[in-house]
Length: 312
Image (cartoon, rainbow, N blue to C red):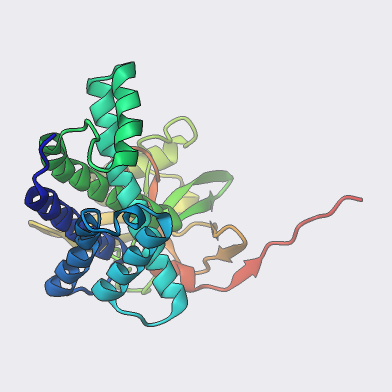
């Protein structure tokens, strides 16, 4: 079998550099391209080592670990042990993730028992792995992009779920519970009372809301211009609030002051003394993860720690 050492070395240099780059992206670390390249260059030296009298040591786990540690230090520097170890672990995780994706796709497309045996033999001898270098060259950018996109999506999902809270609204005799997303972009206040406004979608709550709330959400203009009626006891709770959206100005919405507004943060609950709720028919979450958008100002209220009742 003919081995093109320069091609193998260049591919490993490229892949190691891109893996270090992906590690920097995932960890949100500042990086310099030349340092990532130097780290990848050091990692590629293990290929050269395999063709020297020290070839018996090139595949040893300790040697690979040492090379990895030097790569991480070269690319990101050393500040403290905890950060260094975390960076190294993420680097290995990304390496296994991308490499596993390539191997998985390869054997999904083509598989036979003789090939499996060849892989085991090739992994011992060095560069006899039947996964062609052309496949790796073409598949690595795809696997790299797929891994990057999915990790970022998982990160965004985590951030979103960290901001999901449970909302409990009481208006008169009606109680409504739903999930809310704390959105720093929601900066709507009632200009008179300076109360923050929460938006609640009734799109997926039609089975649990009463007729009055449905009217507030669907007949906003009718109520503003006096063509629709609401219960008399609700009239002193209503607020008409001007707001602006992109491409539209001088819009009006109706908000109501609930009798009770509670935000459940898991271990703590917040009783919102000053807050308004605006109901809408618009779906706020495409996958129905949340049904309302919470004003961040509402989280600054007095929080009460939940107490667990122990039964002996």
